[in-house]
Image (tube, rainbow, N blue to C red; front, side, top):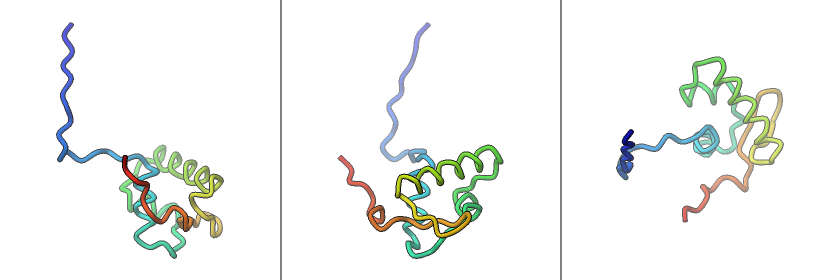
Amino acid sequence: MRVIVRRRDETEPVDLGFRERTLRLLRTDPGRAWRTVEISKALGITVTAKYRSLCTQINQWAEQTMLIREGRGRYRIAPEWLAPAAQD
C-alpha cells in the first residue's frame, strides 16, 4: 500500500481549535461578558455534542484563568490573554 503525503499550501486556511477561535472572538470585544450560546453561534457550532464540548472547555479555561466568569454562563477574556500568543 502506498501512502501519499501532501504538503499543506501556506495559503490554505488552518482549522483552528475551539480555544484559539474562542480567544479570537472574545478579543474583538474584551470588556463584554459573552454568553456561551453567543460564543457557539459566532463560531458556527450548531451540533449539540459540540456545544456541550465547548461549554466544558470554556469552564476549564475559566478554572485556568484564561477567562473570567462573570455569572452563570457569561465569560470574558482575562486581561493577560488579550494579546495573541507569539508565533515561533
